[in-house]
Length: 130
Image (cartoon, rainbow, N blue to C red; front, side):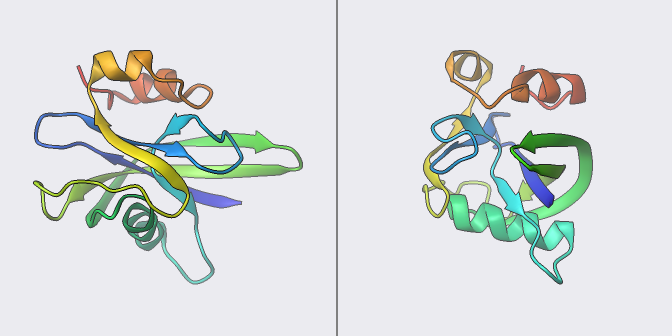
């Protein structure tokens, strides 16, 4: 199943994360994102998902990496794209599939219960806050 994730940093270099409100990985922190709907490009899907989950408007950029996430009989093929906030001072608000949202620095990310392999994957791609 094709999916997207958004790598969004604020002016302070913190990373946008959502706490998942639904399975898979309910209650764990991850990047905003979700399924690519029929007829959508990856860029359109990531912009829509960020808007639905955080209320933020972003402009999709280049992919930073891809992961395969098995979940039961499904395999999610996730392309994570670097995104820029259209209004850099905007405040995120949890919505849709997110029950919480925040911009996290490195110390905060280290304390959060994140989805499996998220931190290691983002570190490998060089997109974690320092």
